[in-house]
Image (cartoon, rainbow, N blue to C red; front, top):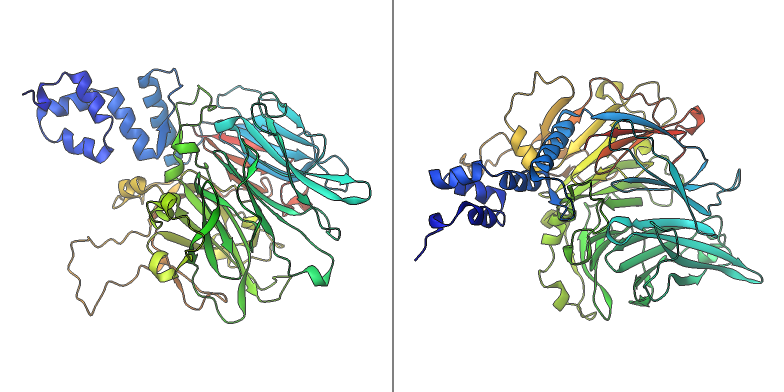
Amino acid sequence: MPQLLDLPPEILVNIFLFLHFLDVGSCKRTCLRLCDVISNSSQIAYHVELQVAGMQDNPNCKLPITVRLQMIKDREEAWGSFKPQFTKNVQVPFESSGLYDVTPDLYLAGKNEKLGRRVTNHIQAIRLPHKKGEDPTWHSVDFASNIVDFATSIEEDDLLAAVTMTKQEGRAPQMSIVLRRFSTQQLYDGIANPVIFICDMPQDVEGRPAISIEIAGAHLVVIPEYMIDDDALHDQRPLMYIWNWKTGKRLADPIPVENPGLVFLREDIFLNPSMPKNSIDIYHISDDNVHLMKQLSFPSLQFERAISLIACRGDPSPTANGTFPKHTPQRRPYTNCPEDAIIVFAIQIGDQGDVTNDEADHFFMIVHRRALLSLLVSNASTSSSQEVPAEIVPWESWGPAITRWLPAESWSMNFITLSAGQRFVFLSIPSDLGDSDDGIDLLFEPLFTLLDFNPWNVKRFQGKDLSNVRHPTRTVIGVNPIPASTPVEENHPLAELPENICPRLDSFAEDVVSRLPYVEYSHLDHFHYMAHTSVLIDEERLIGLKSHSPQDLHFDQEADSLDAMYFG
């Protein structure tokens, strides 16, 4: 009977490509024959680099494996040294309406049609450069109606979806979803209906409603939240609408919720934070209903304190059946793996009833999408009965081991596009300058900080002497230096690492323990805040927003130009 070692090298290579990279390493140490096959295969080396980086291969890429291997090594080296391969300034030749989105290739923004008013009919998009010397140009997508917000599923389905508001004579304004192909800018073809009616808007709304819209596979979820000038309607809860956008079928009656935040965990599972319940509500979409399956509690709050704002994001979004997004450009050999990506929650906690939130505290909570999925029953598709009450999971049972809580400044939450894959970027105040959370007297230059939650990068840098690393500084946070094999006496457990304790401030009943480790990169050269009003991140680059007007410093999405810092 043939043995494994009798197989030709090309078959052995194909076998190893099905293994986790740790198992590949074990095979390599088994014998000289396997060591030789593995060591001399660029396919296996590329396979290992992809898994370590938390990325997936683009099956449509035509580049040779050796080129792809070098590209991912250069990419990880650039991110690991916090040095972009090049930076390109891109002018923004229009006034933004405050609507924006970022994909691995594109920066998109709503164009303000009327000075002094927030009216958007066009989405402006630019494909950001991936080579030196490129001069990208802006393109406009005309929706021919007032856009309230929009979302993209460009890489999976070539889809640009906008929530629009149409005024009607003698009737309440009508809210709809308009679906267009990004490549042609035309109404989406091959589906039941490219215009999906949501609802008639209440008569007494003030201004533009806040909208959350998210897409994963064939599922599209929208939550409008209105500012209503009527005391009798102040307690009206937002409604969540769920569709199969390809068939046009609404999958459930509108569901009352408490917050417009949305993130898909899987094509058929999504989360929506609840402020009154102090929890993350997780829903499952089946063929015939949508039901609440689990509630993950946040840490307990102090008396008369409440969550007043939660925004959340996980990039990239899951795809249908986990397939590779087919509209990914062929030039890109790989893309971030949705299952490995982190989810970021931006949380504001203030006094109950205080609409000004002058005394509010601000935090980021980070968790891996995969970690949240692991908390759910594996056969979610078979447990879809609405009669089964949702399980409420206390914070202590799920949170400390898999999350990271970080105190934040209010101005650091102007944007939520702060993560891509397992990397998270933000601006932080140097510790010796104290608290400047009022966001007014900012005479300092905040540190430009990148956090990498990739567990393999944490292991790579753990225990290394990083004292001589100067550009940037690099620190491993949250890993106990005591080996796991060290005996621990029952009555004297290991003390919690100070860096794993987030101070309760005026918000939580107790200090919050969170142990998700990460690598922190901070430039010794401060990031000039007056030059960049904020920073965003996509799969390939950091995007610094620049404004010539000092008054735009804290005015959400205003930018005169973009600094696209390409890492690969």
